[in-house]
Length: 462
Image 1 (cartoon, one colour):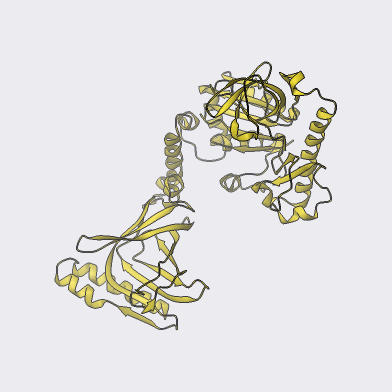
Image 2: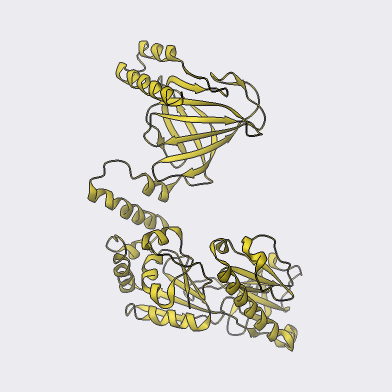
């Protein structure tokens, strides 16, 4: 029995379940926090925080769900556990009781679900009977109905099988050499979590979902058609339970988390309030060690983890001038964010004109890769052609760079250093720096710093 955990209660629950039933497929922060080599085996149960952060959903193998819920129910006296009558993966003969603008309400017997029209290729009318599967169960304290689908799936933590579907060609490379094939009549779809799994884990995962697919096929062999059976359940290959955490429960979870890492009083109580409150708690705890050790610099990793920028985000390059003007050099896509404050961004360059000081024409397909580091007095931009040919490097000398969630900002200090494609290095625009000093836009002390930085960068590039 194994558990995969996600959401705001992950650290505490990882501590609770680390020995029994055992935790698998940890997120990066959890693996780093615990310092354990957690396996990437398939999970028999998945535990996820509910959208409103008030509790968790427990989905998977019935025996493991029962065991996990038994442990959770002993957390505190205000922990409540409910079994879901419409578990994830449950397949029903449903009857349409009402049609709405974008979907239909389907009676399932003791409960009802919501079927989006986009999940079926047939016209749905009141009174219709059809076979449906629970795709997204809903906690009992929610006003939402479980979401249904007409596609029949057998879900696992590393892959899913689709009845009547075709296998995709993605997934881990080792999947091609597994001794077992997906069950006949089912197509496989590997999840991204499978990328880190070894051959044994992949084989185990496929065997598990094949077993679920086999149960579903068996339930359909001599099953009554939906038109005659509705409303009724055909089969439920998984169990689903919901756990509500009260105030005392959240403080019990705080105690579990405190055994692993620094935890502020009321950690889970505050995080359950809102997403912004949750981010605030993470930020406070992330910088706490810095306060303790007397760290004086900006806690860059803690701030960017909570507020950005993150990989894939778009940021502006706000290029300030000493006379008060500011130009936006363009929008760039974030390629990487490092804990030391270094952010790498890329821009696709439009053709026409030349690159300043490099004397090279801008061509279609050129890409500019800029690497900035918070607090540094310079940053480089490397220009490459569409074929990867290096077209030159431009190092901008500026006031210490600041990396904000939506922009990278600094004030340009005129003097710069360039490295040409042939390896020549030269320092440029000293005259513009001198003119800015004469105009009173840059102090002599700041100008001297710019000259020292330019000299050091030139020496480093030569």
